[in-house]
Length: 68
Image (cartoon, rainbow, N blue to C red; front, top):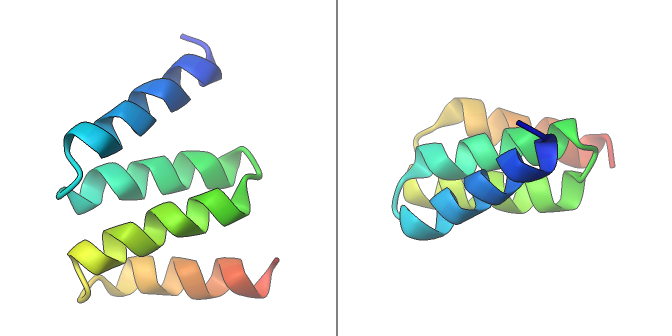
């Protein structure tokens, strides 16, 4: 499977399961790996909205913002 297809699937999942922090975390991780940091941070921020206690996601956002 090509990375573009994976991105489409992860994007679709984040829309279909918009209340699942995990779908947004996965999308964020993929976007970050593709060097699409702004979009990745947005996906992680949505995950954090859904689970404000997720320290791992909070740390990833902070680290990513520092490296912009």
